[in-house]
Length: 367
Image (cartoon, rainbow, N blue to C red; front, side, top):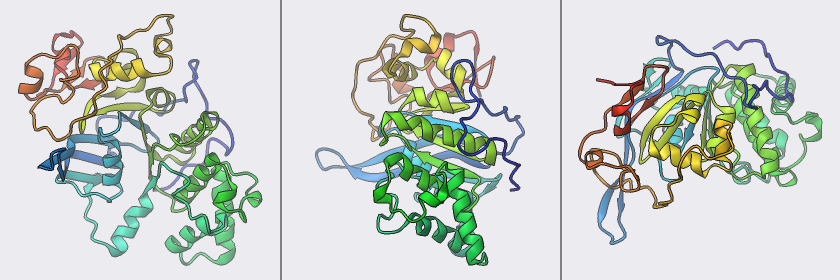
């Protein structure tokens, strides 16, 4: 894929709207081909329950997800909802039990060797823990230049050094000469995460899978990493999958929000639609747990009643309906006994799997 000319210089803060959100990417049409896609993906693992009896853990249970160039999609949900499993699936760490992963509209058929290396050049994973993802015994120049050498072996030593410095600059490690001969142990958490991002950019990827990239950073430097991801989306035309449990940061950064619970995407759509008009009770729970949920509607009072039941996700239950039902304050008997239909808004691309949409005039049931 040919990269466009950068529109945002490294080190600048991307454009923001009146509410302080990053400027969003343009919408993609119905016929646009996603750079990466999950189609009806299931991932099941074998495990045991508290009594030692064998159970099947349904980490993913029928997930559809599309990633487009120049767009940031956020996966939001609590621990155990399946967010990281999707990232590892796209990174080929896990294999689907059922369903397909598509790259540029074609099923992935990676069997090692050259094909596998080519795919890994296109799809890069940024890990949650910047303290563990970098080798503390290697200098920064070695960490980044080694990746360049592996994937671009014909690049000479001088060009490799230039490329390494360029990548550090792109990740806002400026001036690059200050960091090249330092070790990760000499750097802050935010600086380490930027080094990890520079390493991921070394292969000129189409997709960045950012798995909770700010969760282990101080609050004062999280915004810098989020702005960097927004900058890269803008300048490199990269598709970013931003995985987080923090719906406030998802609102700031993303174009699309996908809410996960129990291995399913239960609500999905444009960011402002999800924030301003959530329908699924679990989405309302996440908004109620945000630091200041009232500000999402610009009012002085909370817009959603909090849900205080904090039981963890149960991914071992084999029910046709909603796994959130036993925590839901508005659950009906059919929520667990009947398969959940998909409802789509007539106003935009907002979709939800919840019977609450059945009586909402602006939602239509999909076949």
